Length: 188
Image 1 (cartoon, rainbow, N blue to C red):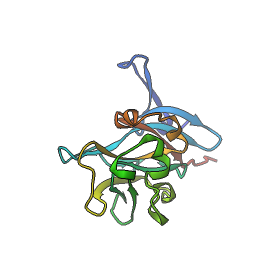
Image 2 (image 1 turned 180 degrees about the vertical axis):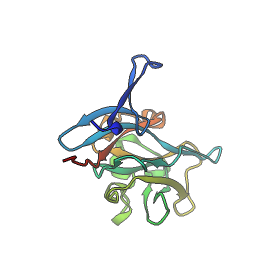
Image 3 (image 1 turned 135 degrees about the vertical axis):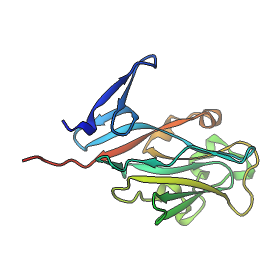
Image 4 (image 1 turned 90 degrees about the vertical axis):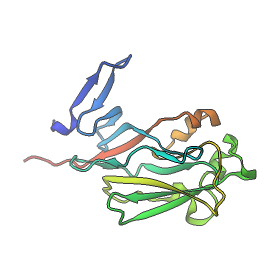
């Protein structure tokens, strides 16, 4: 099999973790049928209290992998617009994370998070085909960005939000599962 699919065992963790060597990400699942790989990626967060932004652009350039269309862009926070930029900044999309009554409520998460109206819904953002790098940024929506708590943005594999049970659990997330797909070449 091609070197890009080599897996290393990182024994510094207990239990040890499988790392997909070419992208240096934890391997969660592999589907040979669709050439999909589920990997663990960091959440990109901005904490309003300090004004600092954490996280780095995700880049798969130089590997046979690209971000799968089996992900969606997700933003969490109150009155925040999360922007999704391709690596060269040539394409960008945004979605709004809103809160009813100015507070984030996990029971309203699916209805209120990025689901304000029209194309502002994060889940409706199509991931560009064969995208290999992107970054996220944040801006206040209508100048009313929430003062306390984190704003988060991430690409996440479809269905993962079903595993989130509480607001505290959401705030404490540092990584998410994301699907990447490989471009396979046949050697004749």
